[in-house]
Image 1 (cartoon, rainbow, N blue to C red):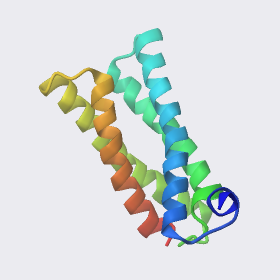
Image 2 (image 1 turned 120 degrees about the horizontal axis):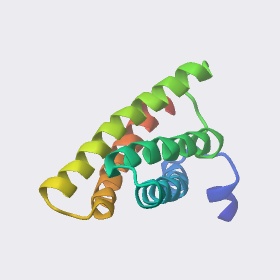
Image 3 (image 1 turned 90 degrees about the vertical axis):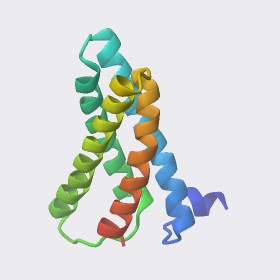
Image 4 (image 1 turned 180 degrees about the vertical axis):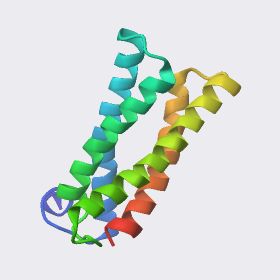
Length: 136
């Protein structure tokens, strides 16, 4: 069971979803920690920090997705795959930006609470898009 979920290659959606969640958690730690550090320690505007942190998290996510989560690739050209992966990420970045902005400025949530809501929305959109466009 451990081998199935952590080591061996698998096309099973349950294994891929498990690995995507775990790799997403790692990327999320990078994203959240950089958001806090850039906003609190470096005093960047929270939306600027959120964009930078999101891109760093997306890079970690890409690396983990290609080496561990998805076994099949829709494109042989790795450059095209990376461009498409990060294009989906850019769509996620816009969704992230507008969720954080709306919930922070309109609903008056703390920016970290807004980030939690954004993370859930972006996670669902990105998994679906990456699974069916890039790794089918």
